[in-house]
Length: 349
Ligand code: SAH
Image (cartoon, rainbow, N blue to C red):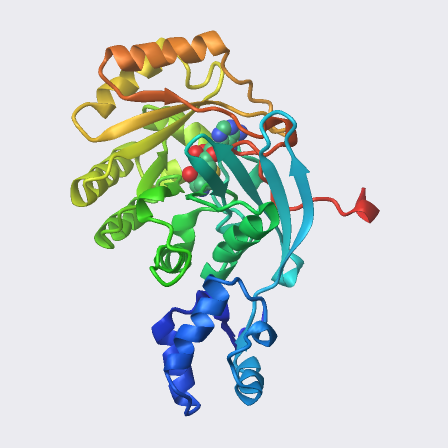
């Protein structure tokens, strides 16, 4: 990564125009460059046949193309989910997942290499935090998977490694670029940002008035349990997170999803279900239950299928909109919370 240069995929058309103006070039070239990058997925100026050679050379001194190579690819035998390990600038490794649903193809992308949040049940936290991804690096995950699979991406979830709202500006830029009419034009209603509950940033996100979906990783019906499993709950109380989510629903008129990973003996009691039902009363929300996925280093046990159904029944009886998440890619460690910072290169095993 060259910090003195602009990452071409993180620039919108106006920003490219400004760069061109600074070097005395015609602004219309910005549209051409943007189209090459975001419609034809060009990976260098060389591919841009309508840009003069002299200008290409000049731009190469100011702008760089972020690097992202497929380090490994795993295909699930169960459901055709593909997990990608990408090697990015600085040799960091990130993971992304391509999933097929009846309604289209969804990708799960990472927003950071590693993660600072330290949720006790999640693999992404194990190796600690490495760095924020740029907006361009978030886009590139989508483009690479679309190119490699030959299939169009219709939905995006920011649920890979990292905390999107801890990389706020780049996440906002990503949403603007990926939903731009001149780019891949993925509708904001098809984009979901998932957060562990950084309340201040939820308010900031609401102010953007995007039409995206917000998912909040709640995983507990109160502070006592939440603080045991999610360090972020020490900073923002259960009440603060819920108030922020309510404000988000109120401002955007979008239904908020609460993710709840059921861990046996920790947060799956009838009492928890009743407490959660009470908290969900009276606002536009939806609870998505996930039997916690195994993470080798953690000794959490997932709740039984029967228990999950029972938990869901209690919520539904109390009028809470509830779904149980399908676990795609579980045989290739591509399910929620199984994405991790690095992988062992063959010579390190
Ligand atoms: N940092 C964001 C997004 C990344 S995690 C967030 O916390 O929401 C995406 C989702 O997977 C979150 O709901 C997270 O809590 C959940 N998750 C993490 N580890 C999990 C596990 N072992 N089993 C099931 N879900 C898990």
